[in-house]
Amino acid sequence: MSTLSIMIISFCFLLNTLYAENSGTWLNYTCSDYVYKIAHDNDGNLWCATSGGVTKLDPETGEKTVYTRADGLSFNLVTSLAVDSAGNKWIATNTEGVNLLRADGTWESYNKKNSDIAEDFVFSVAIDMDGAVWFGTALGVSVLKKD
Image (cartoon, rainbow, N blue to C red; front, side, top):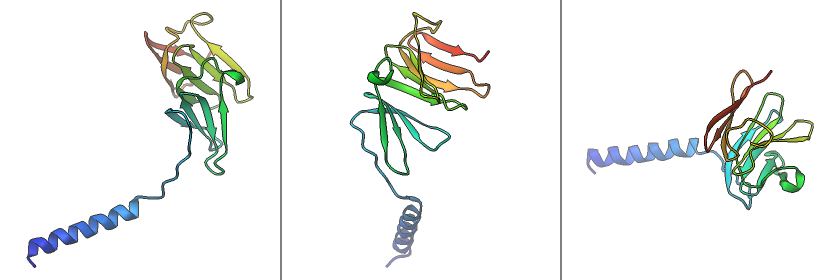
């Protein structure tokens, strides 16, 4: 066997060993909807923006809670979400603006009819270090700053 062959075999063995050590364990949590964005809260729950609402997932138990229009969401097609430092969930929809699910379980909606948000088609949400909430819309960026 040539030196090159031995080197290639050794390299492949090393690569396989490194991959096996770093691959981890895959777990899958089924959801019948497309998942567009995932955020986590301070309690370790995952919040998923989906085509069928918002899904709260406890990764320890696998327990799921789905929030839809029936629960206070303005529209079930959720494009993005973010969790602020107080545990409030800021939820973007593709036609009905933004929903706020407060940590106490109450809901509020922001749209062109009741706020100065640029557009009701909201595709992304981000929260900066000062607590301001930024929304990427079909007509630009809007921000809701803390008073």
